[in-house]
Length: 309
Image (cartoon, rainbow, N blue to C red; front, side):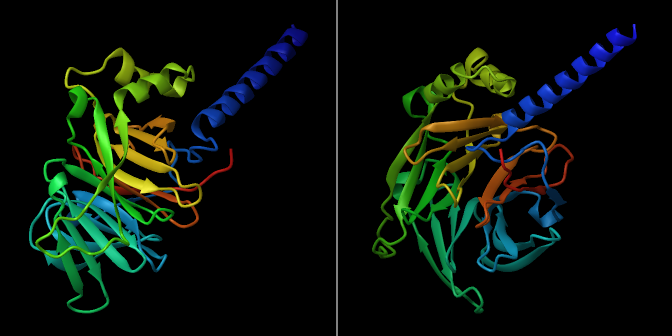
């Protein structure tokens, strides 16, 4: 009996170690080096940011900058305390969906593709230019990011309904291009498409349990509405150049290479991520994801440190 109990104990220990190892491999990888089930820090955000939309790292390295989507007002969030400090209102109304620092210049975008370029932010009033992007007027832009390698601002479109609602397009414009006059439209180009077929092709190769819910969403039970992936935030990981896109719909995060190929995907837990609307990175690779308030929950900011595999 004693020998049997010893063997049983050894078996249970080995099984536990195996499960822990498997779990680690499933949640943290070279491509996605973040345990999205365990934020290192989380902050509830103040009421003015209940509809936080857009998130970017501030040049001073101590703060993040964000907007809430009902008004053009800049907020700064202390990365150590989560305290949000409002700044000036640069636009009294508008459906603001993305924000991004490029050096000391701040860009913001509305859902209809109107771009706001702001600089000398320490001045009152600061300098501002507004540009229209006619080709994106009906695209329902929901995310704004920046690729330092190509000097391009990336605009993630949620409302593209091309190809039977199975495709989403990521657009870009070169920040070094000649600034158009107020009567001219900003020129943008297509960077890559995000397609339902690519989701399905990627997931069919995965037997890992962490992809089970994604397989159910995008292969087994796709909705009649089509491709239920609507980009709500986009950012480029500064150390490897991978593009991260988050969707509040189906709470899905995807990682793409420079050509738009899917490298990894993750299903986000609804308790932690009630409505993910913004993401950004620090220079050291720390990942930040913001959630709007939803169903009685507070808006929040989640912090994920980069981990070794």
